Image 1 (cartoon, protein in one colour):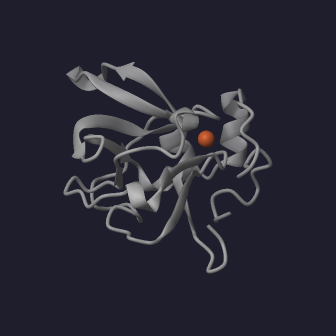
Image 2 (cartoon, helix red, strand yellow):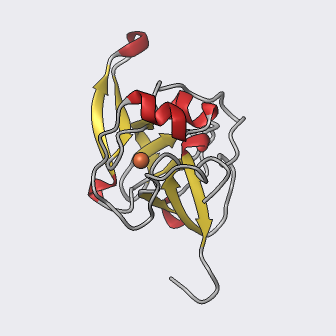
Image 3 (tube, helix red, strand yellow):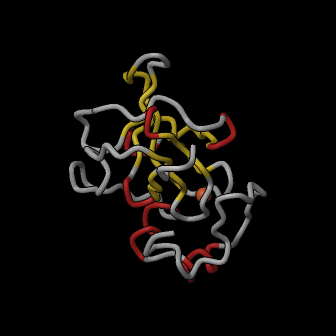
Length: 150
Ligand code: FE
């Protein structure tokens, strides 16, 4: 848990049951910064997030609901200024939606459990998948591996 999820009763690292909560609930349980990206599809400015050049060993979870999204070994150094991954933990970790906003044709990436906006996925990524999951740091909670586990 981090500072963004301590008062969020819907956050769970183990429960993968889908959440379908109204916007008013999210507004209450998320910090304003997480809410702006997760529920309003905001984008943090490049090179400003906490994780774009972070290299810790562990797991990245959805900051809105705790759903496991990425492992650190799927993260790669990207020059785009946002944390970038070539694959998700599970296929169902995320969902996809066509995004035609701003005159671009992009694929939006949403949390597979709570529907939070996470970022976009592009085809100019890293082997072995060639994908670049371009994520917003603020909607990711990083949990380092413990010495004993994983
Ligand atoms: Fe989520």
